Structure formats: structure tokens, C-alpha cells
Image (cartoon, rainbow, N blue to C red; front, side, top):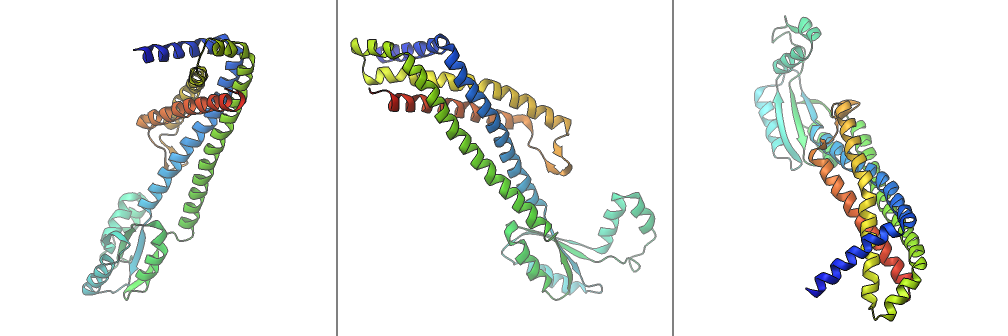
Length: 299
């Protein structure tokens, strides 16, 4: 019970200290708020880039166009070879008549042009659509399929796919580095701000020493104060992030530029981001306070 009373008193004293030293607390809170706003943007970008990359990897398809007069037994042989390839996730044979019907359904112009084509007059090619397990293996698998007898040509958006994945990977790495750098900088800025607070309260600390307070009892209120500063600093970024992202999501109908680039739905994504921001704010505030106490107080 005594430990709970001491802990409760430390929380109360830390909360009071935030408002008693309001100008210095405001500086720390502002520092955390600005940093967490940038961190929030970086986190949203990070997760959406991951989502874009996953969608690209799922949607990229190798299309193998077969020879014009290929026989059914040869088609079966090619399908068997593709099925046994280790990097293939799935495949789907599309006859030239199926492709014609799909094209007619997608556009009235195609329908007007193709509606009178008989199966013999259809100039399209039979095709096999192949999806791979690992996007990095797509070029290797495409070349293996292209070398098969009976395959006329293979297409998968070569060049563009590699560039797109490379761009997403670069953004992914940059956002990770940015978030880490911002957290470290914020921790040191808060540490320096709290150092000033500690310096202005040296008399209070001396009194605590004289009445027999242990080093731990002197440190805990400052660390709890850092916790409150971090929590208060996270409030505005959380509100701005939820409102801003939800507004952008609905304004663009959940996508950017094209249906190909889809945004993550606000719920439950925003709840996760809010918890991350709150956790970062609290941890950074506590670390900054702990560092200031440990380094600048000789206790």
C-alpha cells in the first residue's frame, strides 16, 4: 500500500509540476507536437507505401501469348510445365474467345468491332496468365516461360514494374530513417528543455535531499513529468492525423491518382497510428527526462 501511495504522490507531483513550470512545459510539448506531426506523416506514408507495394506484387501478371495454331495437347503440356515451376503462385488459361468476350464487355467500341467475329476470324491469341510468389523472381520466370515451345511472346510490364518497386522501396527506407531521426532529435531536445527545468528547481531538489529522499524518489517525478509532456504533446498530432487522413481518404475516394494506388481505410488504421504516436510521445518524453536527470543532476 505504501508503494502505491508513493507512486500516486509522484504522479500527482509530476502533473502539478507540468503546470507550475508552464512556460518550460509548453516548450517541451510544442517540440513533441511538431515532431509527432512529421512522424505521423512519415508513418502514414510508410504503411501506405507498404500497401501499394503489396497491391503491385499481387496484381502484376505475366501474360504468355501462345502460338496462333497451337494444339490442345501442347497447351496442356505448357500448363503442366508452368504448374511445376517453383516460383509460380497461380495460373489461368484464357482462350482467344474468352479474351474477346472480356474486351467486348469492357468497352462499347470493342463490342462494335468484335461482335461479328467468328471463332475462326478471331485474330487474338490464346494466353496463359501467371502470378508469381515473389515479385523479384518475375523476370526469371518470364524468361523461362518465353523459352517454352509453343509460347509466342511474354509480357508483364517489364522495366516499369522494376522501377515502380524500386521507387516504393526507396520511399520505404527513407520514411524509416526519417522517423528514427526525428525521434532521436526530439528526445535530445526534450532532454535539454527539461535540463533547464531541473536547473530552475535545484533548491527543491536540495530540500528533497535534506529530508532524506533517495535518488530514485528524486528521479521518478521528473520521469513522470516527461510522461505527461509526451502524452500532452501527442494530443494535437493524433487529432490532426485522424481528421486529416480521413478527410483526404474520402475526398479522393480511397485512392491516389488512379484505382491502382489505393489508400488504407481510416478504420482501424487511424487507431493504430494514434496508439503509435501516443506511445512514441510518452517514451520520448520519459527518455528525455531520464537522460536530463541522469546526465545533468549529480544524484
